[in-house]
Length: 179
Image (cartoon, rainbow, N blue to C red; front, side):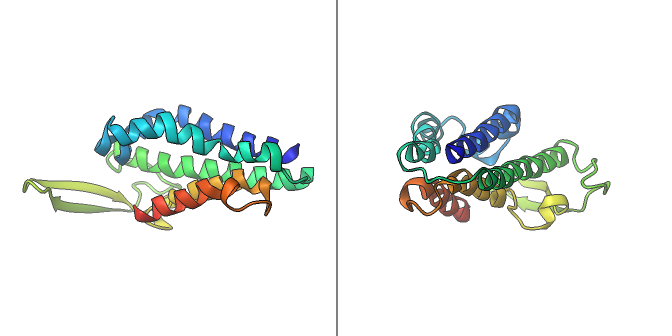
């Protein structure tokens, strides 16, 4: 079944990206802020395995027939979204690790903002904000391909169901809009 193969292949690329980029995730705000708290641990052990696989579970008994061409188009769009998500995260990582001493899309140094702020304890800090590469498109651009990737690994279900195959896409959109 082309739809199931397409969905699982996009998810496999997404998971491979996660394990390849694991150190980048360790430097993300989720991990730095929550550390190994209840929500992170529960999410990794319960939520992610149940919800990330819900599309494939749905497709086992409800998969519409889609053509090879449709499956390849969905797969290509989904794989592209996963790559763009990785590339945008990588740009931000390289920018922060080099303290703006890197090239982003051929521009060195990349455009950025030096933001000065005070913590709740009154300590003054400085942060560099990237406004070049993918990050000149929008403030949290990396959320856009993340949401689209989840849509494309659900898309082989077409319009055969709304809640089942697209639940994660709806959930992720709400979660990331709140951030």
